[in-house]
Amino acid sequence: METGGIILSESLVKYSFLRDSNGRWMQFYYTIIPEKPEQIADQMRIIERAETELFKRFQIEASAATARRFFSSDLINHRDTLVDYKKRQDTDFYFSIAEQPPVSAVKLALLGMCLNNITAKSRDDNVFYCDTTSGIRHIFVEQLIAPDPAEDSARQTERIFSFLKDKLSKYDATIEDNVLRTWLYAPHVDADYPGIVKARKALFDSINLTKDTHYIASTGIQGGTIDQFARVSMDVYAVTGLDETKVRYIQAPEYLSPTHIYGVTFERATAIEMGNTDFLFISGTASIDNKGEVVHPRDIVKQTERTLVNISALLDSAGFTKEDLSSFIIYLRDPADQSFIKPLIDQFATNLPAVCVKASVCRPGWLIEIEATAGRIIK
Picture 1: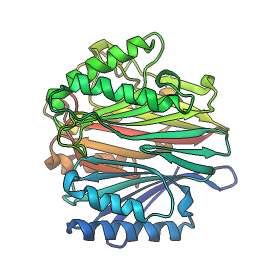
Picture 2: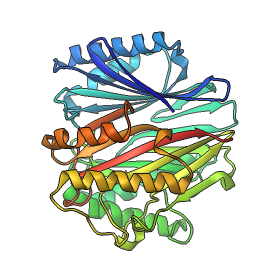
Picture 3: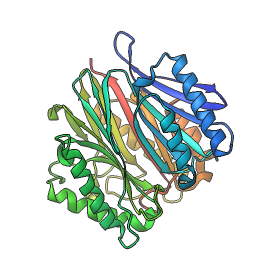
């Protein structure tokens, strides 16, 4: 993976390119984080200007934009600014927004992803999809919510998955066969995560997603939503046109336990061969051991080190190395811990596009969680 970092329009920009054997870029990740606090309109202008300069520098067409994830410090008040940004763009893309304040004390941070083989794009409400030359259709479902102040997180999660089932059916897709990745956000994760777990497990049992078949790679994390009564929000990534034999569910049981050991239902990581490229999606990973226990309570440095060990184990199990990493999202319970973890992250993956945000992990004892993507050319 080719990585780098530059300053553009008062923003720190980091990027990663996956290139084929001829040097042609295939996938491009980037992060844009303003260098200083600004009012929201100014912050957005800085990000947008930096993004334009970045695309121009690397001769990337706007039509290659596939996904943009914004991390906001105050989503309800930033929503209109974010929606206006989306309207100004010349192309459509998966548009994910969550209230997860960047730890650098700015209002917004952006993680973007581009693909170089898109043939067509389309949208139906909050479902965006793009077709590619490899015959794969990438389907993204944005901000599924079921806001009802009378319902708990379990009931809202149940209805969200029902919405997802109906939306996927329009594309001859199902949760069990086509969904590769989910992100579940809860504004009050310490209180509401148990309900999310309960509802997800019940749904998975009903469609034969078990420890003996497979689960879905996922992150379940604190994150504010666009509606004050939404206890849960979910983003989804699915594909159609993929040979199911090209999907691998990755474990590293000598380092971190299978998730069903402690009653949850997601894959540690999922690897997918698409043409001559192998992609890896690593679920939210924390300082956990092979018995499912929290390792190094109250020690952010040692928890970070153990989390990186676990990520390395998952990479190795999937046939990847840390040089294949394309992006990180780092979730911290306490943003004051950034100064402790930054040197460790920088040493592990120099110039990797990474966003670090305030977001409590699903167990109070975990101080940090990291999700990752990786890609490599199949020899």
